[in-house]
Amino acid sequence: MKFLHTSDWHVGKQLKGQDRLDEQRAVLREIVSVAGSHEVDAVLISGDLYENAVPGAGAQQLVVRTLMQLRDLGCEVIALAGNHDHPGSFDAYRPLMGRAGITLLGNPRRPESGGVVRFKARSDGHETAVALLPFLSQRYAVRAANLMAQTPAENVGAYDQLVRQVLGSLCGEFHDDTVNLAMAHLTVTGGSFGGGERQAQSIFEYSVPASIFPAECSYAALGHLHRRQTLPAACPVVYSGAPIAVDFGEQDNPSVVCVVEATASTPAKVLDVPIASARKLRTVHGTLGELEAAAPGYGDDYLRVWVREPARAGLREAVSDILPFALEVRIDPEFSGSAERSAQHRDRTTGSPQELFERYLESTGVKDDAVSKLFARLSGEVEEHPS
Image 1 (cartoon, helix red, strand yellow):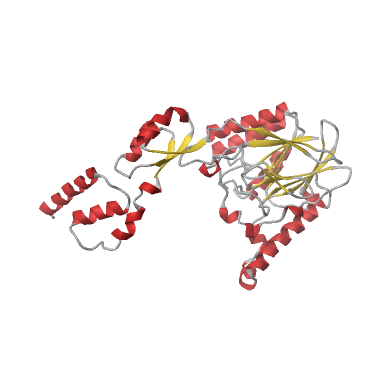
Image 2 (tube, helix red, strand yellow):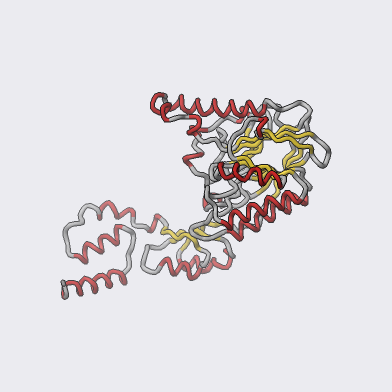
């Protein structure tokens, strides 16, 4: 049978205040197109469909329509909650989505109560079982009392043990003549971060080894880490990665979905299909003149700009004028005046107001005669009219 594995859509995510719903719509439209062109039997979405636990109406409408479009292709559609999603909401909509032929799962369930989904692949009739493990918060494994009474190592062990128990129970329902798949949203030890994950919920102190997925599993479809990668284990343990870079820390990550062929007796074959609908993120460096000269080559990429000039009034606006898609503008550390700060910090109490202000400007890397002159004029007006 053939299925598409994707995760970490983060619909509703903004970038430096820039709404990206149109981009996210284009990306999800492309994913639907890939699922249709490859005639997959199922689509597995391994968590973080949304950016926030309380997504806006536009984000919810986009996700629901995408799930419906995937289901209209005739394939099984299965999605579980990640750490950004609201598990209670997933479970609340579970009966309604089930009527539409879409499986949602917010909280872990016993195999017989929805923790394992079974279906027959439409393409070749293969019986398929999918074990579902939504994001499991540390608080379920490490209670407050344990935090007080146990060592950090014991707490880590408690989380590892709980995940093993839950997954073991789910995978215990696998059969030799079935295509056995696992879906989970978690951190696997040794995985590489993509750059945009919530660090507090991704730390390796609360991770599990890839070896927890048994050899009977044909493929483990993971979400949470945003970089496409496969971890060594008895079966393919795969992060599909995010199909759209959520911040500049992910600008170099490949954006793909995984199209997978699996049988009950042979290793899964994975094809990475690029997703190219989103605008690129790019970090650029240069003086104002250099940036202006290079601007035509940046197209409509969203930019993080490191300016190789000292800070001055109006510099941010000047950069925006020549680079309208610059979402973040910073001063290159070489020009930030950090080398002078320690010397300037030693005396902030002696000298005239003008001298103190100019020391402050230098300590922050700002050297602008116009700002100094404006301060002098305002200071003079205050002295002349103190009331």
